[in-house]
Image (cartoon, rainbow, N blue to C red; front, side, top):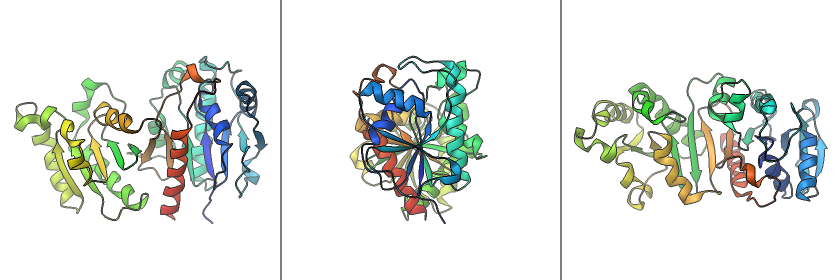
Length: 329
């Protein structure tokens, strides 16, 4: 039987992730939602926020099959490495953060969860804790033994996927290879079909250089690498348009006729998307054998424990995971 329960990880314990878990618990969820975190952490943060949430302990041998009541939250207790001071990073909890992600990801692989939803982590403090960590996307790829994954953010009717993710800008051009573009595009096309239910996805592809290379006068990557790769993919029946200049691609003229945009690097596509829908966007990892969605913002250490946060992005991440699971059935 396909599970209908979902895992929720709070990310950095000193940030707003625990707050988000508690505040979202006030709303009825259509599926069982299990927070994988420290129960003591949530209890302390609830007191700090002045919110009343009933924390219901659960374990893998008896996961619930019915949603918690509004005002309640299922918690799979995961021990902290050190006490948490709200708003203050502590590398002693790096292993705790990774353990919550491992439990959620492995739980999806083992069939306990239909998907996982993640609150923000702090990459720097995890690295300071002695673990080489570049992000959720890469961590889950390794956990699930997935060779290639694709990071995609979405808000409303705009979806932006990335050919490269967390790379220094000077390394991006060398990373854009025909093999990479073909793998990423195939994954994007397949998941738009099978996880989002789009029968014939239409994808716009950004050029790498200004003006998409200006016919070779501003770089030859479009001529030598991107266009030949796209032509091969078109031969497989994938509906692609591009490479197009990124400064004009993100206009209604083009966007109203596409299902997703493939940007060449992180800050080429995501500033546009976040301007359009920050706080109401979702981060989706494509290519995994599991469903993973996430909020579109960071740990906001300065807002943790204040109650001055918006749960909008987490709600969108939850709804997207639910919809993807239903489409996939």
